[in-house]
Length: 259
Image (cartoon, rainbow, N blue to C red; front, side, top):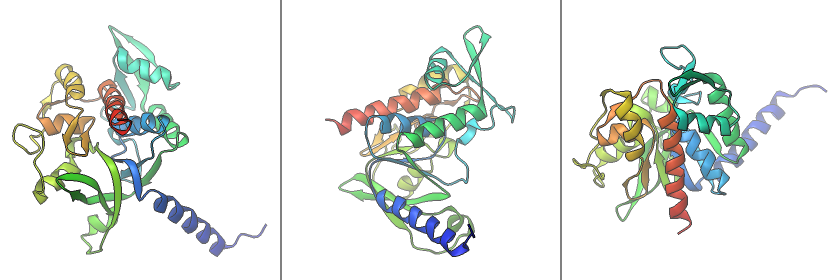
């Protein structure tokens, strides 16, 4: 068969335009395709909800790809190990309640399972604003990440969603946009993003779950973004809390969607 460049281009355009058009109205829009965002998306899709992830980088997986300081292994505790076993990911017992897993296998498996469950992933997309109606966030305003990086003045498009998950990690990019716009106050002690504290893995793993919750009407925080929002510590290359946070935010939103 002779290959035709125009047919190749048309196939890509038609498929992508159909995909993004179908995702302009969602049950849940997740911003950030790190471990907590991917985990949340997988569990929500398995419950039958319409979910899409928007990621500004070309790759997905967030900090999980790099393990600890580019040694591509991650550590999880027993609860995190149970999730990895359930996903079919190989783990090794590192003794004393610690388990290791290959970060590449973790990332690729989680991403693949999410896609197979029906999650649509849009990489190279940045969120530059949100939709707000009656003090509730009702959607995202999106643009191409290179547009933002180059500082180009290109008008964006909008996506409507019943719920938003802020899982952009340390940066809390979506919440900082909302904070800057001044449309509503967050459910924190200051009404703003408090900011991440120094590394303390033991405390941070627990507070990640405590802080995984609704932070303003229509928006939930998960993963490292949860600790950064409510002013807790960072945990470094232990990822059990990230996975558990993704599962927890999925449960919370599933309850809302079914109420």
